[in-house]
Image (cartoon, rainbow, N blue to C red; front, side, top):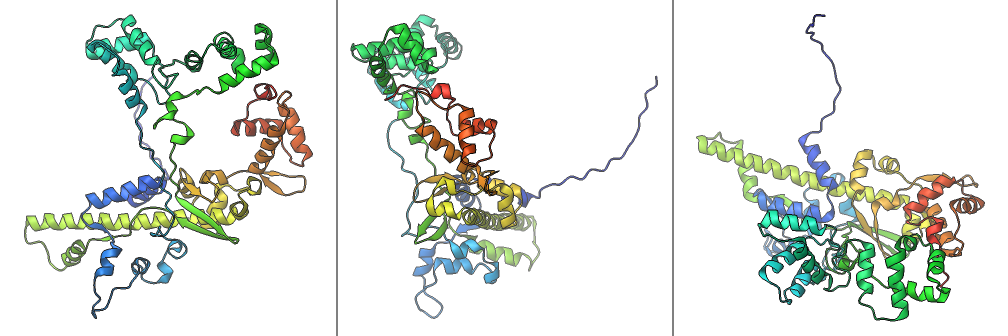
Length: 484
């Protein structure tokens, strides 16, 4: 069979983003700290852009010799041709003033886990070889305090990377020293090992010894809350088991999280992008940031304006003109995109507040209305993809806490009254039922479904399972525990 070459034409409709659109999308996706860093780097890298210094302006005299009394807000508005061009967030909210509350995260100044372990191991009488092994092991301990790599793997790495001829016994001996350091549980290979390391330091009381035996011999049953089987196997009374259980619950499953860098809630710093305050039923929305007002540097503005008046006389002047033009246009585009980002974020958050007004007044999750990205897109006139990027990784602080913007988006379900209710309302009702259940006889998903249906919610059992997992509520068998 002969082969033949054929030419064919095919038409494709493909949408491509302009460089300005790509830049805007990138800025829109940035979190508040990322955006502040981006602005700072832009000011440092581009000589054509500068921050407006309101304090310096206030110290300058006016043309008639009087005092300069124009506010920073007035100067910002002067950048626009008329009031119709001024974005809404300039009227309704501004950047923080000196009198406003500061929402920067509190950073505790303390040693990292690595520093703390290194300080302790340095107090031991180690040989140079042991010191190098210790440094390598400590460097492989994760933020939670676990060492998940095997002694064999560590010894192989040390041999290959440092050329130090060490045996597995050498590594294991140093590892045991590290496992004796504080906090208790450091250097554990898994959760069971971590709990046992902590229990080893407890006194020889009966309850402590029983707690150790439970974790050592019956950890699979313990993790599944098969308490009856454990008590029967160990011949324990319910009161004894409660005491041993209290000892186990006092342990820290993530000892490394006590230090900066652990993934505990206390070490995760969230910087809000918005503030919502309520005063006598009036809601005030503020866009929070440390971003200064930007403008084109005066000398670059003059050079750019004069470029069209005369042609470059030589190559050097041509290169200088090209440099000025590139930097000027880059600065102008960045300033425009930054303003567009701020306006888009504010308008998006304002639409969310308008839609979920009842929640911001009460902060009761049951008052949340069904709301999806399409709803906010319709209210703002933006594309759904813009709303998605504007809300991803952004947070709002209220009088009761900090919420991710995605918290306010939820699907709606039908109530027997004919009204649509939010999934948040149903999840809140589900959570209340579970919290009040008898922990010796927790409700199954079928029972939870029936109870919610009796309240008028048209919901299926598989939806109950989905909401339960979303709330971090385990199945009935794992919720079963002894009465306190």
